[in-house]
Picture 1 (cartoon, rainbow, N blue to C red):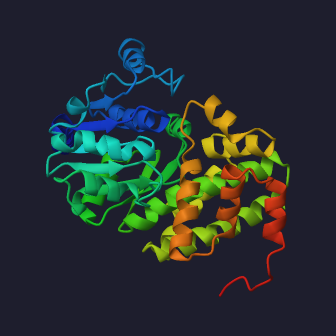
Picture 2: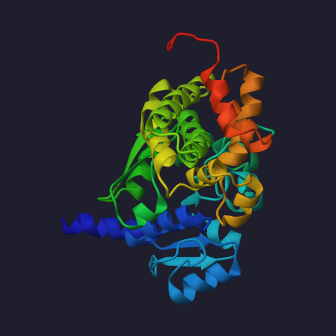
Length: 347
């Protein structure tokens, strides 16, 4: 037993980790690893956040109220955060993943494992985050990339509440390495080979979370919310399997699990933004007031364009697009959804 403990400590001392992004989720995951004994470099964009963490051991800008481990070393130097690392965790908004990947491409070694915890579909290219990373970082191979998704509010992870996530990679050893790295008695990762489906579940549910918030803002009741989640999941599966994801993935943590959490939980930024829309506020005003990125807004546009390109029927997602980008009345969108041609539930 003593020998095994010693080996674990040696691995922690030698395993070099970089975390890119100090929003709430990036900070929570960095602190999880740091509390396990891993020292890591946390790349922070804002100099004031770097100073907060260094001097006060707290990220007051994005994760106020949670003390941070001394094992976290904040830096504004991207090279320092990723150079010669065994693993780099990327937790930035999806629309800046490409820029970050291009900026750190020269510093990523061929043996470095990259883990994406960013959720979204890139506008214009319709690429998932793993595809963006592979395109932008020449040294990165398919078997060294993993993605993490699932029902996991940062605040509850920081409070060490029981949480499950999915870690997906095409290489099983990569998935197992990431799984063991993040595993604690309150944070349980499950492995999967479905990199596509796991990412799509995490991205698409943000759009339905917006709709869930709108429904509550309109005070539509439980029947409406249940219908929205049920048929929203059906549309997620329709697009997800069309793009190569596994049906069963959408029945797991990164599918229905994350969907239920973010469509009903007030800790969800997407749900919160949607609720304000339902209460009559304008999207531009809502986004201007929110410090954190509402990923579902950009994803809505990607899904609207992508579904038309692929010929996938997604009426709920389309109505959300009309509400967000064409100023349609949410109640009129609901009426249109409810009065479509009658059909069978399952084809």
